[in-house]
Length: 299
Image 1 (tube, one colour):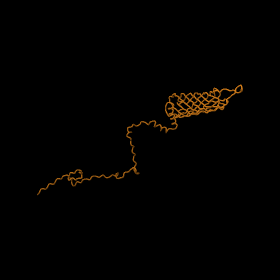
Image 2: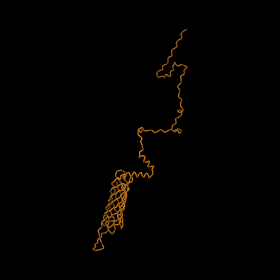
Image 3: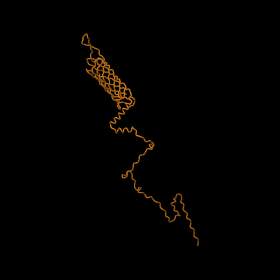
Image 4: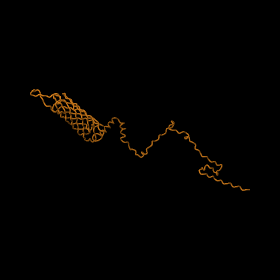
């Protein structure tokens, strides 16, 4: 008997470069051993269903995304409180008209009338036109101006007034004269800084004036040429200048500037009334002067 030939040894196949070792069957593997197949992931129900977009009316409502935050604001410190300038308008809108008026009055008082009630200079100037009329056919027109200068406080002001007028006022016919000028002045009592209101001024002033009146012979009257020797009933005398006097009231109203300096300046209108009760010299009946013009206010 011949000896049995030895079985050749089984050599495992070496994979070539670039080939997958799992694809080359090993000769050493048992023929009965089953190689398990890799499990395949079954598609989920969510993957099989179409994605629902916001355009789909049946899409469920989603929570809104938070707005993006500026990274530069993350390090900024939060304000401790709301500034007063931001909270005031809301409070004023919600308040009643009486409260708003009171708040504006308090603001004006703090600006125009300081708590210390300081003494300040007050100046008021005017350019005016006057219509003059009186008893015994006195009538005429004049133009002129006046200036008030004096100290003022929060609720009162005292000043000296200087006025000048020029024009033509016909005096009673029996005098044969006309009034061509008035120069004078007096004392005036005013409201002081109480006249300042919000963005304007309203100032009432009372005073008493004494004038020197320049009187000339009327230009339209014939001269008197008669002597006492020819007719003793004719008496010729020289025309005398007058010294009229009387009370005065003026109302100045206008707008002030927007500055917040020590002195406030304003421009506006002036209306007034001047009564001439009589004359310390010469003869002048009761006469009235209605005045209107432009005014300047500083205080």
